[in-house]
View 1: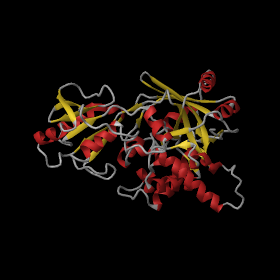
View 2: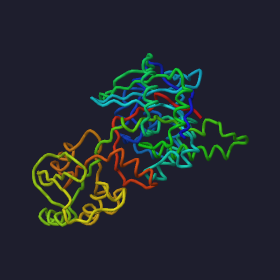
View 3: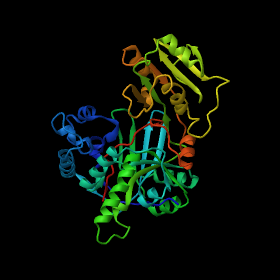
View 4: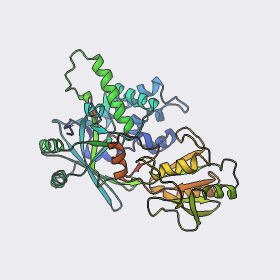
Length: 408
């Protein structure tokens, strides 16, 4: 069963919510975060990316950065101010981007269930990123950004969600990127708690490092505790839980800076050993098993040759895996996409237009547009206990940090 728990959120007042809300810490670099927070002392980026308030070149993992995070958190709590709910609550979080709409339940989820794989994963985490968020949580004694979870949709929960959105919203604003963010407090959280007990598994869609860091924080604080009961707030982590039939995955495309010493002719000839290569068309794959490639000012369509071997296995058959195994590794010499500096990743709404720009401006030699990974792919890989290839999924729209914080 899925254990969810109400919590006493630390949050801004409604009239300050739009100023406080910030993009997730891990979708911007220091320079981008500094630009977004410029002239906005209430931006939560001062807490999640505190190096923006320190001199250029500051090591983002230095002691000074975490001290600044705490200083900024305390200042924001006082100046905004941030207020703590009188009673533990659940919330609903709606995102609207264009014609797409999704509503999730904001709750605290069990670290025990994460450790026991009842909250399932599909991604490996990096130790340095875990170290960073673990320290951020322990210094602030707060989880400031939610983990994005999903589950196989339940008609009963859908009905309760729609009923709960009939009340007045706590927050309702449209961010600078055009995404509308609306949050309600659930009037009867017990019903939701009981209904989620019928959900067998939750799945991490986005936020593996946040979840892993919450688990590590719990382990550290449990070891320091003299009277651990299992009911302490650090045994739970902040999450927004969306039904799988509402979640939107966009393409996560690739651009490579050179052709690994090959001429255009030789590169195309190498591709034809595994793919049918057709010139023309646009840059958007229409189905699984179709890749678009931009090279020398032209779009090409790649499809697997009829005589090519069919990959076996859930992970191996993914389009992102086929591209890696048949193009990026054997032809372009990119063995590990996580460490190779010759490859860049372009996710989300920027789409194929960004691929074309990178190649036309000389920042890449070739770019590949992929058909988006599906939710069924993600759930199947997670259920099998396997790992998706790096940079397989890009979830859009993004949740905002700072609206609901879980203090531990």
